[in-house]
Every structure is written in C-alpha cells, then in structure tokens.
Image 1: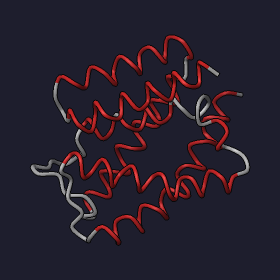
Image 2: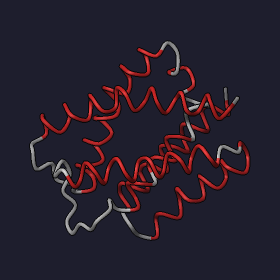
Image 3: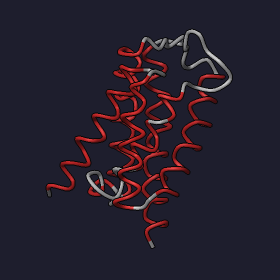
Image 4: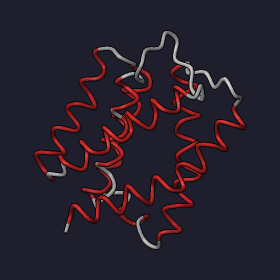
Length: 159
C-alpha cells in the first residue's frame, strides 16, 4: 500500500514539475523519478514506448491545431512528452486497479485524460484554438481508447 501511495505522489510531483517548470531545469525532477522507477521496477520499455507514442500523438494533435504552444516547433515540448512515461510508471502500480474491466479504463481515460490536459494547459499557458469544449471532447474520445491500450500494453510487457 505504501509503495502505491509513493508511486502516486511521485507521479504528481513529476506532473507538477513538468507543467509548472516547462522546459527548464525542473525537468530534472521527472527524469530522476523515471530513472528511479526504472531501477526499482524495470518497465523501461513500457516507459520508452509511452514516451514515443505520446510524443507522436500529442504532436499530431498540435499539428491539427488542437493545442497551441507559443512558440511552437515541429514537436510538442519535452515537458509534455515526459508526462507519458510518468503515466506509464503508474499503470502497474497505483493505477493498476483501473485496468479491468476494460470499460473502467475507458471511462477513467475519457474523464481524467482531458481533465489533465485542461489543468496542465491552464497552468502552462497552452492555448486551445478550437475552444475548450471541442478540445476536451476530442481528448475524451481519444483517451477512452488510449488508456485501455496503455493498460493492455503494460500487461503484455509484464507477461
């Protein structure tokens, strides 16, 4: 139980360091958390795959003008991409209870995913050019599928 609580607290610390620190020296916080998780639990492949998937997905959403980073580049900022392996570090730990049944993961993804983007976007000054309602709606549909897929990948890699 203490390990799951520590996992949740470390995820939140990494989330806040990314969102509030942006691409600054604060990125050392999520990097240290991820390295520590890798040392204690392994899961390096899961975290690496989540990083690459998230980088591609969020960048595609940026290219579709769902997010506006000022200034922006071809890819989303590193701080946003690092949120993906941080999330992956929770899938077999503090969020393991959300994996089954699949509809629980879908429901949680549809609600918590967009809420995280909304809160992070407000704190980090990310714009939603299509409006908050459209952005949250699109993210809800995406995250209903993504969270289920992330859990399935975590289970597959654990086998």
